[in-house]
Amino acid sequence: MESRELKAFVILAEELNFRKAAERLNMSQPPLSRLINQMEYDLGVKLFNRSTRQVELTGAGLHLLKKGKDLLSQMEKMEMEVRSLPKMKEKKLHFSFTHSAFHSNIPRIISSFKEQFPKVEIEIEEHTLSSLERFLKSGKVDIAFGVNDFKDSAIEKMAVQTHEIGVLVPIHNPLAKKKTIRPQDLEGETLIFHGKHENLGFQSEFLEYLKSKDVHPKVYYKKRKESCPTLVTHGKGLLITSRSMMHTREGAIFVPFAEYSPRLKIFANWARENKSLPLQMFLNFLEEQTSVPSSEMDYHLA
Image (cartoon, rainbow, N blue to C red; front, side, top):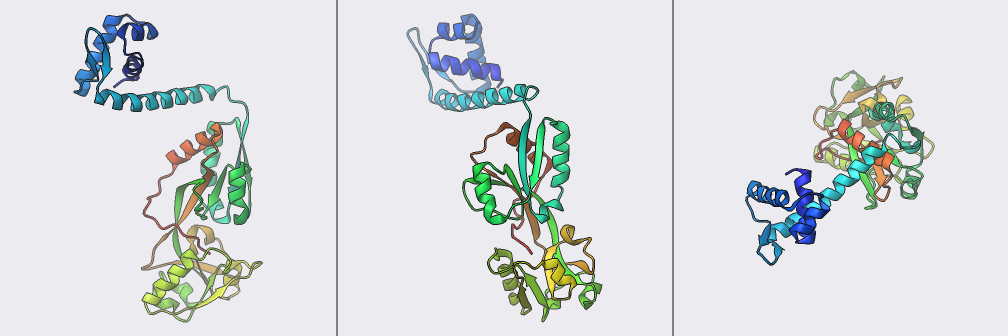
């Protein structure tokens, strides 16, 4: 079904009069009748009941009318947006990044987007998790990138990348010589977790996993001003993290898990009510550049 045919159908369905519909379409009545007949033939269903006195929609016609009007509206909006791109005045997009997102492929995607749309000015800032929800809803931040998965229904999300998960081990720890780490290797070791005031979803589940394997590590919850990787390099314990975040860490080495292999998921978060054209352009661009299976685990890691 072509857009020209759909438009003709919708106008006839609104007028329920071939003469008036043909006038609105700037065409004569016979070509309109042939067009509708061909549509019905192609679809294999009657869209109108016709008599010498009146034209009525069939059940199939009523269904197509609602869907068709929505589709035409979307097509008109899309056409207007595309036509407005060359005339678009300079616009800004405000991004917020967490540490993990800086080590993802997002900066490269933003750079490619900037090449395609040079009139869009990009600003990147860092905010605390506690303020991000408010900033997203107020429009101060257009998109927040990180492992944080907001549960607020007013905030949309898109998974944009996953990272391999393993253990960051102090270089002098015997585990640093292993190619992979098994659950049993963590018996008696100290695991460094975020503070108890932060999201412990993954950490709690990981401890349950170890418990099911009859492995009982010690746990150290970092204090507010402490850095998890720094604690590792100082020999305070092991850190569950991703390879991409820690591959350059001095004094420690990343060792992947042999059995337990979730993936750290990086999210793009934005306010559902934010309908700005630059944001929609970027989201479309981002979706084309990324592909993350929905079955991957979405958890906050250290």
